[in-house]
Length: 196
Image 1 (cartoon, helix red, strand yellow):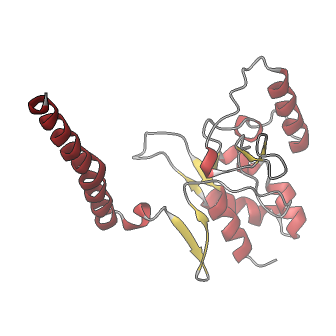
Image 2 (cartoon, rainbow, N blue to C red; image 1 turned 30 degrees about the vertical axis):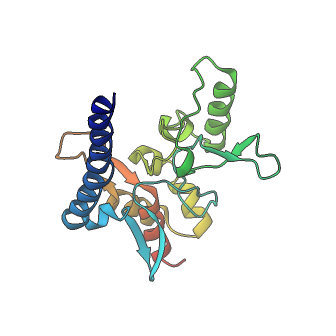
Image 3 (cartoon, one colour; image 1 turned 180 degrees about the vertical axis):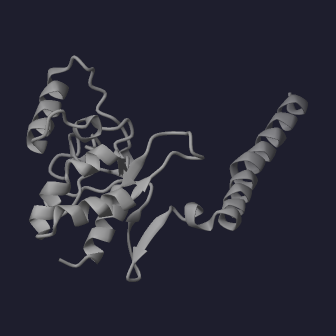
């Protein structure tokens, strides 16, 4: 019995060390050398302070800022840990709403978001949450429909704000993968740099 058990235990320990310790350390070390910014979380620093990540959206609610895609992430309710509350862009709870297109709650949420935008038709990415709930981008159309609101709240000419949006449009990866997009945090930081 011991002659059968010993090789099994040795292999378990060996592969645990190999795949659970050595491999992750090697990949982490390689990533830190090859792509240090990405390996560190693609953090965005302004005036020496980390203000966010290029990979995770943030909840902007003021009319002075461009708003990102709705987030369906939640967190434990501080008053009752057995329940959850809305916690937009909670990276610890990445998830979509899991509501079917026919769900009344989803239809009501989409209708309310569309009405709040005040444009018809409303860009889909501004009225529906992404599958992860963490998407940091909106479509160029999603950013452009917000230009009038942001310009009015900041007392800026719409043309200035529209130009800022157009300068922040990121193209398709390698010229053919994905869709053009606008990083909302980068756009809002550039907006703050205008100082009005």
